[in-house]
Length: 363
Image (cartoon, rainbow, N blue to C red):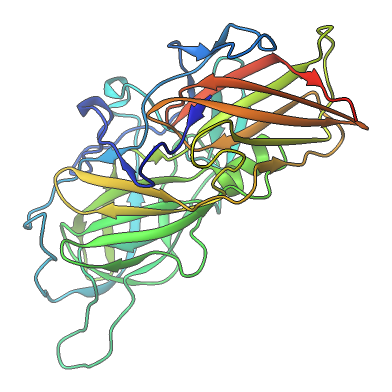
């Protein structure tokens, strides 16, 4: 698999033009994880099977258009409170090299993961064109963020805010899925930077839990038109911050192992034996917008605790720019198995890592 940090703890990579968002007047279907056909898990010792597909590359950047200086906060304007509606469509999908998947319902299609929005799914939003906003003639700052709800169960859905948000034409709207926890999305600095936290702890190995809790994605929409009460924004695509991996294991006799508990950590380097369980995401305005993920220093391995003793589990992991060797510790009933594997992971890709061979530990 991959190595999240070698020297620095902050990594920023801007995507290729095909992967960039351009939320100004362009809508695109949000589709599923696509299995990569690049490199694969390599046998770093005699205990690993080959033939598992992986990817290279790391974080995501997002291009966004704005009529303002991209490196300055938007000038004070006469905003009005409006219901925010964000729309998407199936246009432009063939131009997207890697289609991202922020939906709340995910199913395994073998080579890919398919997804649906469910009516009522929640996404956090923040108007990142302003650090704060105070209406003329008042001294009280007003609401620039909130929650959007999907209007229907479908691959493509529109989203609307529960409460009115102060906004105007050309404002940039940051969307975060799953809904950011308190404090949700904060903005500060010049140029404006929006930050929020993500977590990988408590995974149970199922796609359902990943979709609702660990499938961290973001997008930037642009408000294209307004009425006195409604603001319409268009979203090209949402970008995933993580990689979803499907794992299964065998013993030295190639017999499948059931999974009572699976722990994943780095096999070497400064953070050997640990894995970052939380991280801070920073989205910086500009053309293109950039995203930085700063993982916290992990003191423990990342542990997945499934129910029902399955033979395979799904795990959301942070992408890496370079090949990284990971250590696995598998509890199968009363037995313990260990091993290592090396791979590079790309955000938004679906990695099938099945039949990895582990060695039993003599207790």
